[in-house]
Amino acid sequence: MKKALMFGLFLGIMIFAVHALTAEAAVDVKSGIAGTVTWRAEPGSALAAGAEIVRVRTLTGEVAAARAEEDCSVSEMLVSVGDDITAGQVVARLKKQDE
Image (cartoon, rainbow, N blue to C red; front, side, top):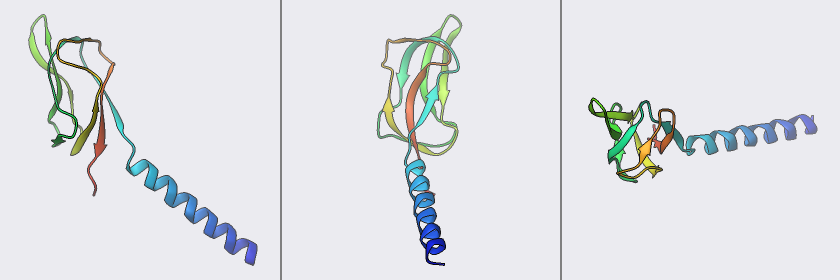
């Protein structure tokens, strides 16, 4: 009985720890299109779902290369204005807003 109780307590602590770590984990955002970066969100900025994170110039004009999928904040930008980026390149790390 005592072993089962200790195991249950240990398991509960581990589940809580994993949840706490993943809740604060940064989410990598990839570019959907190649081009030259003309604008980027600033680290620390709060973004609403659908907001642009990175804008690029392509042969056909300027377009959003990455958008926020949900309300979040920018924890790190991995590209700068003037950088040439490729489709699929990680351009930013976002932190989900607390529920």
